Length: 570
Image (tube, rainbow, N blue to C red; front, side):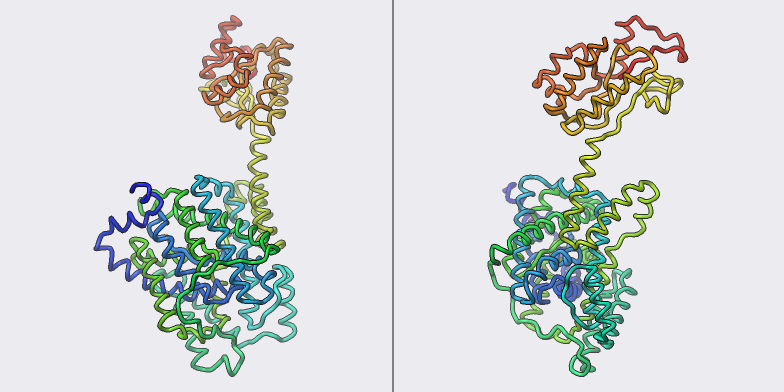
């Protein structure tokens, strides 16, 4: 039973459910549904699939996550951050066929869901930490720009063939010059966008619902679709989504696999951040691996019921919270409310204008843009700011999928560089200061050498060079070289062989190589590799102080004062 509850947190929530929470969850669910409908349809259109699939991708994931998800009130569904990624795969492969577009999008959800579940079961929830904050900012700002550009034609009342963000922008400019703008549709869209932006900071006022319903009433009442060619949603298919296995030709699998993999990484990165935020606020403890399984189950479920990839929502979750949500029952109520809409009143939104849907997506894209924190990053760490700019340009110029690939490549390069060329310092005892410090800051010192990274194949030779450089530049004759090894958390065969060669080179100069503060697991590896025996047990010390004391004892050195110290390089 414990294992079942571990992987199905919704069962435990149901077992412990308090009746007093029910009115709050029902009310919050109904409020949430009023936002889920227009947003789901809008993000479906932004993803290149028919609007109805946005509702399918809302109903099924909410129900699946309520069973598998560990977060108490996180809301899942179609997301603006994923729209550009989905569109980047669907648009060139579908060839304008809505059925084929929906199948491709569903298959991407299947790929994403499968990868997330496998990663969760293998306890790989930590992988999203690979994407640093500057990289995420660059990627999200690039996605926001891509989404904005993709929605401009709909806002202006015409359509273009998507060929990448910059080419699309040029095509939009030419279309405007050619007089293709439908000014009535643009006025409706601009009015919708204005209302949304004006009301977006008021969590208790459903700004999106008010704007979209208002636009629908205006278009329907004035007959703008028939009289002025304002494009509208049209009647939705009646009924619930049917079970369907998405499949495409083998030639389409590679871009679908790449897109689904990118979505898995990005959606979990966003969900994990949102999940941790609300867990801290509510005093809960959320397992990132179970979060990955829950998100994967939601994606897998929607894949088999005509949906497309989904993620957590940073805009709909606060709506649920403000409305009084207590548990995932809120999401269940919201999903059931949408299901009733499709069964009982599918024609209710037939006059919803496409330009209003574009306004919903544009408002969401504007919310993705991060400026304030980038100013802080620019002040404190310039190179990370330019890393953000690189990722932004990559997404904006190359598109969402290549941009994600670039972001991941840069993240890996950043990680490898930190380990490949880590910080190291020659340390010493400084006058009037306890402990051991960098002699570039405290020059009158008893010198030691600190290495601030694991020792592995990529940085082993650099370690050897830095140690020999510390010996060469020492102002006094070196007898011992003590490595302050507390930051060394791991070592591999290549590094051990390099250290063995370094020991022999130092011995040839009459210098003893020692280690201080080396962690036991790392010391165990040295024993297996034979390096511990080569150096000798007497050359390993628990602290820097004990290493220095032993040096003074063995070499019969006395410190008379701080101005007359024997130098010891380590």
